[in-house]
Structure formats: C-alpha cells, structure tokens
Image (tube, rainbow, N blue to C red; front, top):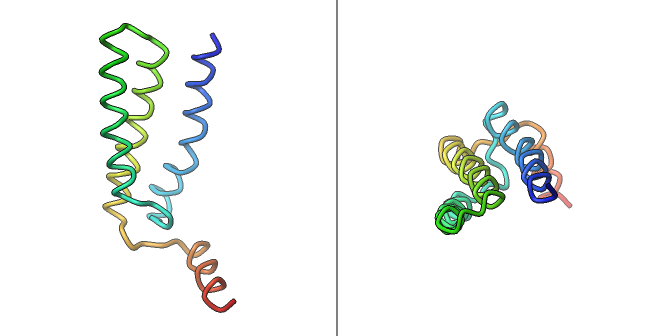
Length: 96
C-alpha cells in the first residue's frame, strides 16, 4: 500500500511542471538531455520491474515514462521559450 501511495505522490510531483510547460510554453529550467536520459533509465527500470512482476515499480516506472516523455517532448518543442514570470526572474538575476 505504501508503494502505491508513493506512486500517487510521484504523479502529484510531476503535474505542476507538466502543466506549466504545456500551458505557458515555458521551458525555463528544463534540460532536454536530462529528461531524455531520465526517460531511458525509466524504461530500463520498468522493463526490469515487469520481468520480476513488481507491480509497484511497474506503476512508478509507467508514471515516470509518461511524465519524462511529456517533459522531454514539450521541452524540445518550447526550447528557449520563457514565460513572463521566469523572464522577469532571469532579468532580476542578471541585474543583481
């Protein structure tokens, strides 16, 4: 039960990033290389979980695959696009 609760927490953790990326077309802080590698590692771990029939890690891996794929695809699509909030923060950081 605790493992599946962890899967739900994982979903909750990914949602704000994905929603912001898709709604705002903002890729600030998104590394396509990092999320591409995370996607590959999630696929490999999920394959292993399927082979040993570990349902918690199959569920967690599936969530990570979908989330990483969405972030990677939209991160590539909106590469170098920044929303007004992140643009203002970047401007402030450059002037400090």
